Length: 434
Image (tube, rainbow, N blue to C red):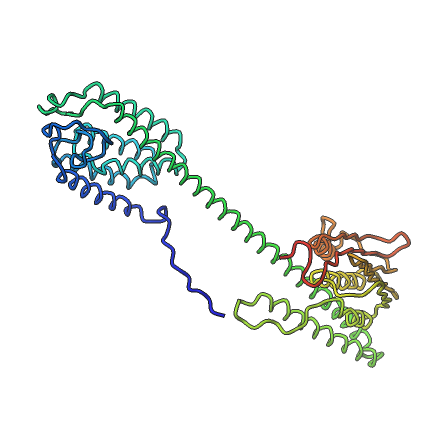
């Protein structure tokens, strides 16, 4: 099956090097302003036309009669100063906003050609809002606009007065000018808010995705730990018991010692087989999958035979309509029986011990019960917090499937383990499985 090629994606502007945007803006502002200066009458007051329109329009487009001073060294320096200050926008966004606003205001008060000069201020505003300095951006914009419009209303002169030059030969703003400037600022601020919210949503989605991956990795490690514990604990315990029997009977009863050694061989082979299956699940993608079968209740007879060969008397009973549960419940039921028999062999005490294994298939669940008539197991034997690793592992297996688990001494002596696991509709249909 063919797969469509992955198209390369441009990185987000926030991932660009910090100098990229300032360099682009410097080029656009200088070239755009020079084009606006030479694209129409440089001295709009000599054209004798009534003007109306946005204040950023040049004279050749029938725009407002503003921006009549030719660009000189100071004008070009101011056009380059705004982009240069933007190099600090990620580390000090508020300072950058204030500095770029001052440079832009000075450029406009000097009445240089109106072109793309305010673009640097728009980028500084957006950087401050996206960085979280919303109050500084909104309040600073309001105060800055009020100060600029108030100053231009105070010092702005008529066309005849501006024709005589001066330090700030700016015109007095009209209502149209005020409406346009305020509208432009609102558009930039609202756009910045939208960009900020989108960035926050993307960051939150990335955080949730990373948390999900960490949780799944933790659950997988826990599952592998349970598998390794159950595989090793059962077989190694059996090997230990049979090795002790073989050593004790080697001289007195060689035939029984031979039987114990055969049981050790079988247990070690089973341990190696299951270890390969568990480790195979950890293989990197592309390597061959393990060929050993997954442990389940269909291997219950083999498990009981190994327990009997270790010296336990095992009585087993399966009731109800036997049908294959989903893989999670099948493995959990097998491991609970395996771990329970291991605990019987380790903790039931000396003398003949009988373990009774009951598997009951219900309509929606399967009940696993393992009881023995030994001296019982102390829950404090393996773990000082009272949840020995074997019992804790069995409880975690049942809880992971949404089932129930209980373990404790029997009233008449011995120990009982009981688990109820949901069957599901078929293999792979465990509750919560993906």
